Image (cartoon, rainbow, N blue to C red; front, side, top):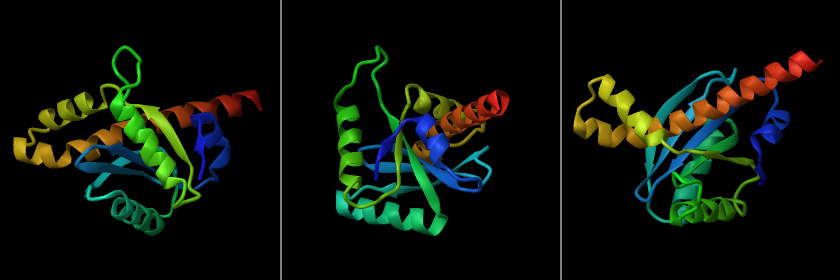
Length: 162
């Protein structure tokens, strides 16, 4: 497994390969999946966190079942751009995953993704209880959609340069 930039991921991916988005929380891991054309992100059910080895097994089973080619994981930077304890925890999670998989990870700045997810769920008139269940996967979907939009822009730039 390796950590890549989004530009390196663009060069790494083959046509028709899907990628997954992750929003790493203390109690859950929000999940989302791209379509095979890597245009749209769809929320998936959260993984309830237990301990790392169990979390990793569940995540890798998901990646095998869904034929995931790589992960985009939200990096929870502080609003001033500094890295706090949650950034350190996310980086540690990815370092630990390096021992378990060859799939690449891309860190994606997730500032305001949870806020955007909350707003979207509110606009859909989702009840408070259902919002609590869905917020992490909705945030993962916003994280992944941002990365998919960037991959699309990189692809258009490559087409323009060719």
